[in-house]
Amino acid sequence: MARFPRTEPEIAALAEAMITGLTDNSAIYPAPPIAPLDLTTAKNAYIIALNAAIAAAAAAEAATATKDDALEELIDAMKSDIRYAENTVNFDDDKLKLIGWAGKKAPTALTPPGQTRLLEAPRQGNGWVFLDWKAPIDGGAPNAYKVTRRERPDGTWAEVATAVISEATLVEQPKGKELEYRIIAINKAGDGSPSNTAMVVL
View: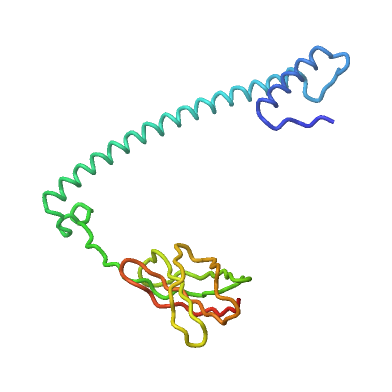
């Protein structure tokens, strides 16, 4: 069984075929509910509406292009006056506020990251361990993370890897020992506080 078309061109083509078929075969289809003449009227109304929609879309596209050009000209004009104003008052914030602008913001000093959070060792195997953690919620943004390790219970902490994302897979780890790991977020301003520890036995 045929399916009624979904696209507009397919619907229009089927309408044309139906009008022609009903007109040429009136002996077979003597009394269709919608006569071929009425079907033609409906099809023509659709064509008129389609052409109007196409014209309106073209007009809207042209209007949008004109608007975008005008906006670009406005932006260029505003930037010229802003540069003039900044140079005239030597970036004085109070005076620039008179025209709705502002002076240069004082650079914000970078601070070390806060404490790395929620360190876990969800997967481990023969001489390897996968660690993941969450970034600090305070302090400066981390550039990287130092992965540190020690032998329990009181070994010395040593840096064993550096990661730029909040996870790391460490291989060739000491076997048969109780090990503790912790993570320290770092940036150019310094080191954050160590995370909680995660204990593993490989």
